[in-house]
Length: 178
Image (cartoon, rainbow, N blue to C red; front, side, top):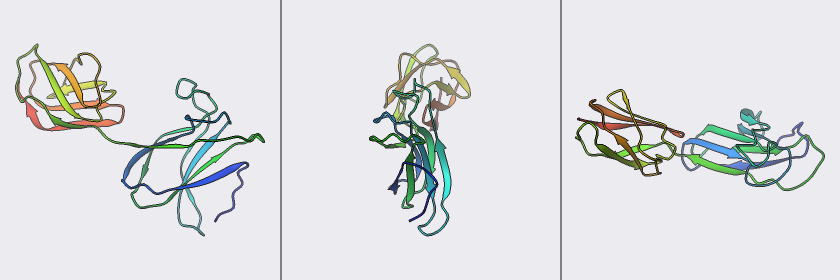
């Protein structure tokens, strides 16, 4: 559909079902020194590069030669082109992984509590919670958060609950009262 100046490249098409942020990587397979690009645009026209990644830190993937696009915003129903390529003349397998990054939500919590007590906040996509505030005041997280809950120690503040996670920020629709 389009000529490229890439060497040793392979093009994939991807049409998301949900509008949102996606991560794209070659971390799941292959030992080739890969580069990833995401393009938008119609066949027969000029493609627009909307994201690109080359080598990443070894603590992110099994090898520093993998590529990771940690977050790119994609629109449902639009076809995007993911290009995996290498500058190397080597050949081998490449596995591309595309994951939807769903934002966190707060579903429920007890509307009142005493200072010093523990409050369990339930929701979705809460893994990796790094900060929780009630009424703008940071409260300590007790233990590790899970995908569906975060436990905090209540302070003397009242107001909306805000949870900061690796995949976004969730804010309660109702307030908490201490």
